[in-house]
Picture 1: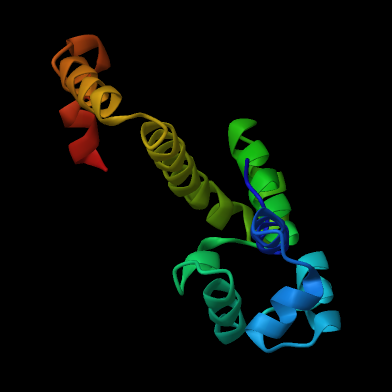
Picture 2: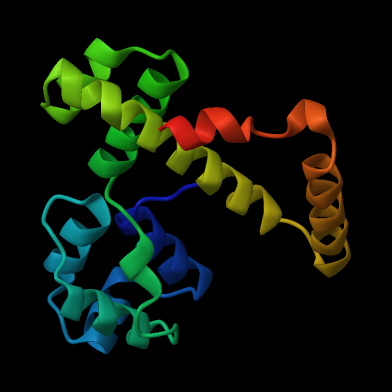
Length: 155
């Protein structure tokens, strides 16, 4: 499940059975501020994310990869536009021209495919990862699944 940064802070706090007041004290921030961070009512600075991670005994940069609810919603809308091959909606979402959206569609499609592949790959244990690598190698040897090199060189 993809949690937003505020949701993840709350999740980690509850996992460690800390109240908002206790975590705020450990991180040396105001309790009301922590409430607003968890609700994503205000933006959290990188320094504060690091302070919260340390207070929760996590790696310093633990929260830096998380996005806000608004960012997650935007990413989901982008994925839907790409899946539907809706270039005009993509242009609207990204506030770019149709020509730029047409070019961007291919880049996004590839990025989404890579993210999905990596996300699924990372769910595997070591044995599963080794098997996945073998299967991908096998697929590259089957002509039906190979790229047309002549067509690729024309681009």
